[in-house]
Every structure is written in structure tokens, then in C-alpha cells.
Image (cartoon, rainbow, N blue to C red; front, side, top):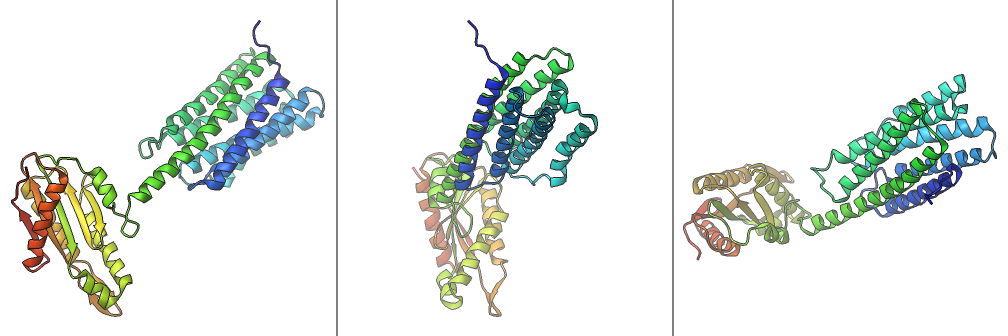
Length: 380
């Protein structure tokens, strides 16, 4: 015997799934590192649940037709635009203006009061399905458009569920338009939507958890003062053995202890921040910059000939020298010494080459500072 579904029962299950989804999303919003959009999403789920409750009571003839038809349509056409706004905010873009959110349900409400079309089940369902399908397609677009900049595992699953939900509403809209809709068909559609919306809530929670994990990893691998990678990040990013045609440099700000002693540690922090910015401005996106501790930085150039690497190192040295900072009217002199090791042939671990660069740095310091020394050492 096939599964028999009646619309009032399905609406009860659908409403229960929406309430559970709302509570789940609201709970996540209280502990999320990026809660934007989560509370509007939870509110949208609750509005849709209330609308489903009214529709269910209407099917049991508990409420007057004029009350439950107009109100359930209003709640549905408010809930889905709010759902779209929540997904948009969740993706980090600007919020949708309130006027836009009010325009859709307001338009349906005015049209409904003038024509009384919500009293017709198919017309009311058609208005609800149009709004839901468009809002869900817009939500899927908001989620998917960030899949390159934030490639989290839950993102394609969330976008897929949103599109599946939109497709179901669009298919039912086709049945309504061709006058082939039935109560049993609506029951089956809302039964599937129950799983879709529960899955959407689950993926939203998962997306928030994945973001928190990425944020913790980034914090663990980022120097909080300069924003550059820290030693742990550098060691995880460097190849075990540096390939030929790459270069690694050890940098050390000159007389940094003297700056701290003379101008104070706050001024020293400003020097570190400005130096990191100056260094980063001269590097490609593929190059690696890390603060190894104190006033020491590391630069790795993954694809650079010896002459190109030396030219980059000279630009780094000049960029730091051009920093202009002052403390209580007195200029703070900022320069850097750089030891550069160019990998002309394969072989040697990154630690070996960094050691060679460090010895070249010592030579630069000994030669008077504010200069680049290129080592000609070879590692085994």
C-alpha cells in the first residue's frame, strides 16, 4: 500500500520542521562568530510555521475563511522575502532595504483585499508559490556566488537544497497554472518541502560551524599585530624541499630594540605594522610573508629567478626605508636588513635554505645594515 498523505497532517509535520529549524538557527546565532542573517532566517522560519498553522486550522474549518486565507498568505509572502534577506546577510553582503521587503507582501495584501483572490485556494497558492520560488532562487544565488571566495563544504549542499525547494514550488505552480493541482499533490509537495527546509536549517548551522573552524585556524596561524602569517603558518606553507627557481629571504628591522627603548613599545608596534604593510605592497599574491617573531620577517618567492629575487629584495629594503613615522614630533628611523638565498638547483629543505638566508642576513648587519646580501651557498 502506498503512503497516504492528507494535507492537514502534512501541514502539521511541515510546521513542526519549520519550528525545529527556527530554534536550531536561533541557537546557532547566539554562538556564531558571524551571526549576520541568522536571526532573520529564524524569524522567517517562524512566520512560515505560523502561516502553516493557520492554513491547517483553516482546512479543519476552525477559523473563518477570510481570516486564515488572507493572514496565511501574508505570513508566507513576508516569510520568504525575509528568508532571502537572511541568506543575503549570511553571505556578507549589504542588507536588503526594508522597503523592498515590504513591497512584495504589501502588494499581495492590497491586491487580496481589493479582489478577495485569497479566498480561492488555487489563486492563493499560486501567489504563495510564486513568492517562495523567487525568494528561494535568489537565496540559492546568494549562497552559491561565494563558493570561490569561501569554499566551505556545506555551501554547495545548501545551494542545492534551496534550488530543490524552489523547483518544487515552481513545479507546483505549473500544475496550478494548468489546472491540474490537487489536494494530494499539495500534500506530497509540502511533505518533501518539510525535509528540504529541515536540511536547509541543518546546512546553515553547518556553514556557521565551518566558518568558526576556519576563523580559529586563521587566528592560530596569523600574527595578530601585523596581520601577516606567523611562524606556524609559514612552516605549514613552505614546501618540504624548495624547488629550483625559488628564493627565500630572512628580514630583520634594524635597531628595533633601540626604537622600543627610545620611543616606547607602542611606537615599536606601529613600526612593525607599517613595515608589514610596506613589505606586502611589494609582493605578489603568490608570495609568502610571515612574521617569525619579534622584528624578524620571512619572505618566500615561489617562482623567481636569482635576478628577479634580488630585485624584489631591493624593493623591499627601499619600501621599508620610505616609511615615515614620528613620535612626539621626532622622526622614527626605520630600515631593514635582508639576507636572500636563491635556490638555483633542487635539493635542501626549506630549513637549510632559511639557514643560508640567515647567515646572509648576519653579513648584511655586519656590513652596515639597511642592505641586501645574496648568499651563494648551496645546500645538499
